[in-house]
Amino acid sequence: MMDTDIELISDGDGIAVIGDPHAVDQFLATTGLPSRDLGLDRLSAVTGATSVAAHAGSAIAAGSGRWVQLTTESAQVMKHASLMKGPTAGVSRAIAMGGNKTSHILQIVGKGSILSNPAVLAGAAGIMTQIAMQQAMDEITDYLATIDAKVDDILRNQQDAVVADMLGVHVVVDDAMTVRAQMGRVPEITWSKVQNAESTLARTQMYALRQLDAIAEKLERTSKLGDLASESKGAERQVQEWLAMLARCYQLQSAVAVLELDRVLDASPDELDQHRIALRITRQNRLDLISVSTERLLTRMEAATRAANAKVLLQPLPARAVVHSSNRVRAAIVDFNARLGIERDREAWEARRWLDAATDVRDRVLETGADGVGAARQLGSGTWERTRSATGRIAGGIAERAVRLRGDGTAHDEEN
Amino acid sequence: LLSPSQLDRAAQAVRRYFAPREEGGFTGAYFERLGGGGDRPEVADVFTAEDLVAVSMLSVRIEGHAAVELLIRRSDRLSDLLRAVPTDVSLSDLNGDDLSETWAPRAVYRELRSVGSIGPTTASKLLARKRPHLVPVYDSVVDRELSLVDGDLWRPLHAWLVADGGVNERHLAQIRDRADVPDISLLRIFDVLAWMTGSDNVQHHASISTRTR
Image 1 (cartoon, chains in turn yellow, blue):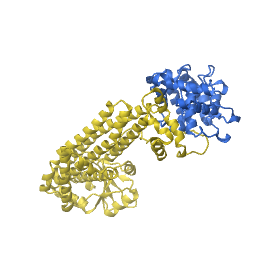
Image 2 (cartoon, chains in turn blue, orange):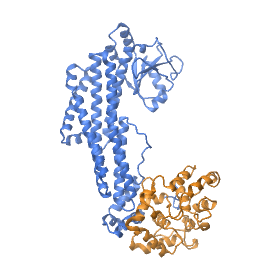
Image 3 (cartoon, one colour):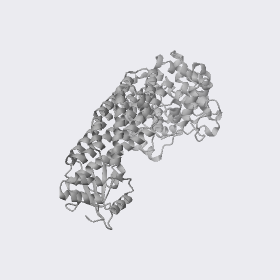
């Protein structure tokens, strides 16, 4: 391998770019992709078993390693890197040509590659898994920061014992991550405090998923539009809270996985690859469980929206309330799933037009009873009262004249 | 506006919409009437150039390539689909379940939408022209005014028409009678009221230049 060559490893979550620091920087500069440090110096632990591997490990550790998250964009940039299936399950490798040749055109190499050493490749793959999990943790931190709910407050307010247990785990894992950051490794004593956390986190995750299922079931059982509006409104807050709980759980589970890999790297590097594979499988299983529950809830909210729309002329206010709440819940779930990398094969959901600012103003006009139109929401069940309710929207149109965003002043109404 | 106590005001709005042009009426008054209607027996199952002119009364412009598709290239296909849609059935005659994805008008609608540049508004107006008692006009003003979800007007309007033994439909008929436009479909009466309200035309008289629907 020439000094100007770089080597790439892909494990499905990310791509490791390894080689001479200058060559790596140059390559990443041409791609424009964000990256983070791989921390290849830890490879020496895993490659210490044989002199050949140790040599290879040292050679890599002396170089530079950056990790690029595998996204649609990065995959597109790397598409010319025809990765070769390696001896380690789920890991491929390739080498980019150096020198004056473009680094986008990659050439598979054989014996000359340092990464052709299975132990080195397995070690690098283990570190990549850690980085991927740290990336996931960072994204959840961002997610929890963006949602309105103060997740820690939510968690503290929970009276359930299972949630209390998770709070305890949170403290232990945070402590262990601090030790890891300070020492660059996970000592046995630290790991001994963390290793039982997984069962607590799994129990908490299942508990939160059951809460989401219960919300879906309750909505499913509710047929009266007024009740559905009330239930949907309540679901807005509850779903956000339980999603926050799941996110925190997933974040802690990822942290435990990072600690576990570090511990294995330190204590039994020969088993690193098996641990890496097992952790990837368990992570996918967790995501599958979450996906089932969130998908069910999404389906339920969509059904509620359809039911509400069917009655939007008869009971406009509760119908609009259901759709409003449903949209919020669906948006929360879609955002949550996206953060966890759970993809959903359906058309992108669009917020209803009347959720925009102009219509919010209109809603307020209606709900505050401007110009007597608000009477529509107080009507009973009499025939004519329902008729009046149905036409409350039309009446509302008059009341809102002052606030409606007007078009171009013509009667053109085409919107193809 | 559809409240019983607003009967006179609603009728006045409809009357004004369908008034002669020189008296402040709208071009849309001719949508159903032009050429004797799009559902008259001799043309009920075929889209004609007259239909394209009729929808222009509602501010819809059919592009040249779309006209070629409707009148020539897809004429037979569209006629086959239209033949499956009865002309003597009203929306309120149906059960809610009838409006499923297999409901015959939906097939016509899908075919229309598959023509480039024909969107939901144009498709609904073309369909309403051919089956005025079965398919309502849909556009952005109506959508906004009624707070519809995903542009779905057919189901909620059907539910509203058949509620309480059809009292709302009967009230529309009263408005139509009071406005003295007996030849206009009830779905169109509903549409006119929704549109007049949504476009701020109920209380204020529009100038001639704005009366294009």
